[in-house]
Image 1 (spheres, rainbow, N blue to C red):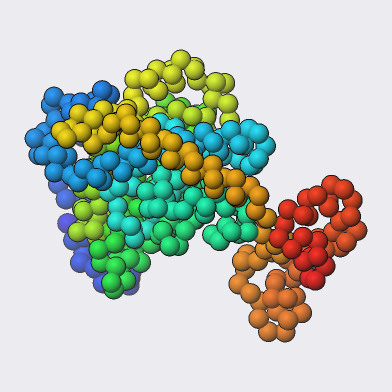
Image 2: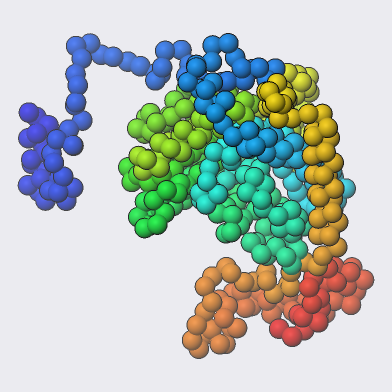
Length: 450
Ligand SMILES: Cc1ncc(C[n+]2csc(CCOP(=O)(O)OP(=O)(O)O)c2C)c(N)n1
Ligand SMILES: [Mg+2]
């Protein structure tokens, strides 16, 4: 009664939402209880992880029949392709990681240990689902046949890097054609962006069957943007699957220092979001759980949260040495005892007829290595974009008289460009500058024409 009166008073004052929405929906008290009920969990004990394959790649004994049947009914070719991409990823990582160590690229991040989470989920999406990734999800692009030439162009910042025109650090991939929105390093930015994109999809005729997919590490969920994004998504609706890769660390911060609750899955219900936790090192479980999450998201035009429990086997990035904060033996034992690649391989080998063999494994490894090295060598020789690219695409081109005076740029950029030209004219013939300038398309001559 009191609530009703307060609401009516507010309504009389002209509060817009109250005037337009039924008063009942503002009433916080829906059910009552006769003693104070304190709680700190959404589940007795911890929220369980969905798992089908054990570390040995054998179907777990207590697997529910419905999900075993779903697994068995899956297209074998698709599962095989999943393992092919998962097999390729560590080879790509190893080549690019060592190339950074040799000073050939500036930076790199590996995805060792998370292949099951990334590729298992990638396989659950449609190819035109809009992906907002964090940075460790290159497997999604490879799954979508992103050319290795484009990948290398981004990593080496060459003139062929059409997405970022050489202006981003390596691994900041983006491809309009592959519905993969460009990675941005500030943690969490993708989470509210994805909520906005899902709302846009919901309102776009012709995209009724598409979904937005947003990846984040568990560390990024400590950003305010995680909470803003989930709240926005749950209120506005729109098809969206949030996939949180819980790999145990945010650089050197272990999960024990990141949250006190039952990890990330526990937060979904707080936002009214259907949530599932899955064993991220079981590619089959990840795939089926994500497929189901996507179905719910598209049919219900709402967000769904998937938390995949995995482990970051590699260092955080080439700027990190994880032996400073975790024991090498712990990493070695995860590598040996819980490899997502091993799990899926054993499973595919055990099927009849077998979908994987030692010969096929060797063939995929060999072909992947050759293809990667071929594109690597080509990209390494390619020129970097014209130096003028450095000033473009920051702001919309300036029009009118001011635009004409400053070559379409904002005045500060125009002045920076003029200063760079002055410095290049002054120092461009010295040995170090000359060598550096030759790496850029058009070199010093192109700058002289500015
Ligand atoms: C806003 C912001 N704060 C800090 C950083 C530095 N930083 C980069 S990655 C990272 C850890 C992220 O961990 P997580 O989200 O778990 O992803 P993972 O690296 O484990 O895949 C941090 C703190 C950043 N990039 N942006
Ligand atoms: Mg992490």
